[in-house]
Length: 368
Length: 104
Image 1 (cartoon, rainbow over the protein chains, first blue to last red):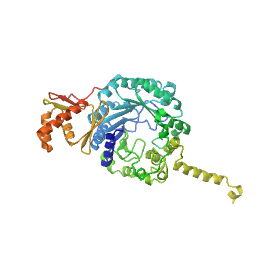
Image 2: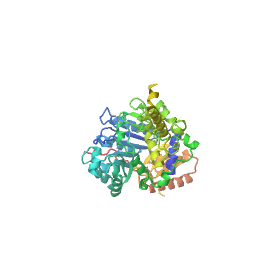
Image 3: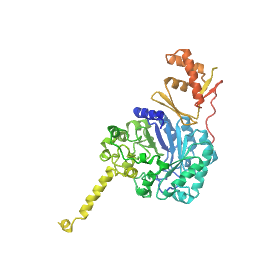
Image 4: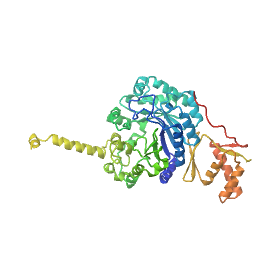
């Protein structure tokens, strides 16, 4: 991150400005990805006028970085009207799409409107793997075509690849595909629970061995020794720092107008159909509750040796039952990276041992 | 420099933050932070207001001599124009009709 970007983030944090926001324009989608956390039915999306009003309010609040996502953004017939208005308001716009519906005309418009970047989900370089995840025939072919159209017009395209058991063996292939297309690529080993709390899809995620391998791939992490180094001594600064941007300089708005601390933090804080965005942002008790979180007062994580380097997501912790509790998925990442179990893992092992002791007690003891 | 009409590029992303304008370049995503004088020039750069008029406003708003204001304003707009953030024209720039065609 550039020094000026860091300075801008510091200033936004000090001023309480939502510098970044994600607005999902729809949850509808033409794909049915097996790991998706959304309900794709339309339960009453905001109208075009409501969407434009939200953009006005975000601009007034000081938001500069705007991500337009879904669902599939192009499922909305008025998507380009929303995008056009966002650019009129001088947002720096990033779009997340599967690119299936991006032809030359759509790519032209994105370029002409000055879109900053477009993120496209690609799960494999092999159609039989990618299409089996999206459950949409020919989706890889169509998405690659869309990427080509955008890349040819000078748009910055980033391929995003969620790693799962189903596609784990293909991440190098996806990187090679990105290279051949002249675009960037990223991987994400995190499968997010459904917004309704259903955690069943977490079973699609990669296991410890796979995570271990990813963490030691120099092509992905750079200097492996540095990346996988054990955590150093915990400092006061680590214990008092803001854990992430959620509710501090970033928020998420659903197609129904619900405002959340982050796309991965489904804690309702208000709805722009009923309240002004700025009032939700500034005064929602839930927003302020999230803002109050500091590592020092986290009952488990505050005692963990990983506290200064862990990617602990308060949203994932919330979905696990407690926004101040551990996020087991991040514990797994810290463990895979360093080989050192987290405080949460020690606690769970101790609890498991307690149960084991009771089960293993002599019959005579149990009877008495 | 002859009098020019500076106009903000429609390709940039920009927002006021704490009284200063943050601008992202469309060409290389580099970030610019304008101080209060730079922000005043930026906000006045609508393509219809000449640099001469902007300099007069700067002298009214900030404690600066016309010569210093003119020098700083010229340097500023030339630098931003080099980054594609401002467009400079010798004639007032008439805003293009807004509204892009719907894709059929």
